[in-house]
Image (cartoon, rainbow, N blue to C red; front, side, top):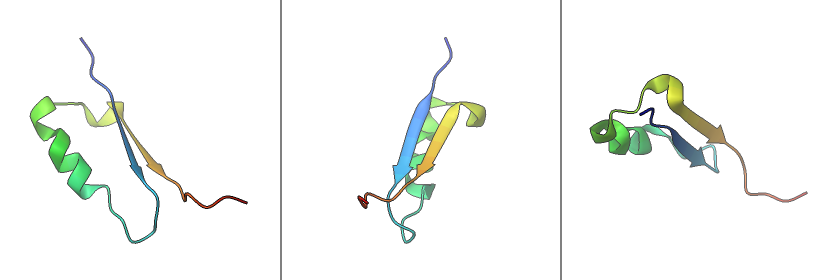
Length: 43
């Protein structure tokens, strides 16, 4: 069964690195990890 993951950071100062490390035991393929770099700011 394929595994998928979603990672989100909301500021430029944040990094996805810690979340990627937390996913390692689950052996999610890199192609199945979606990284979202969005601000929580509302316009």
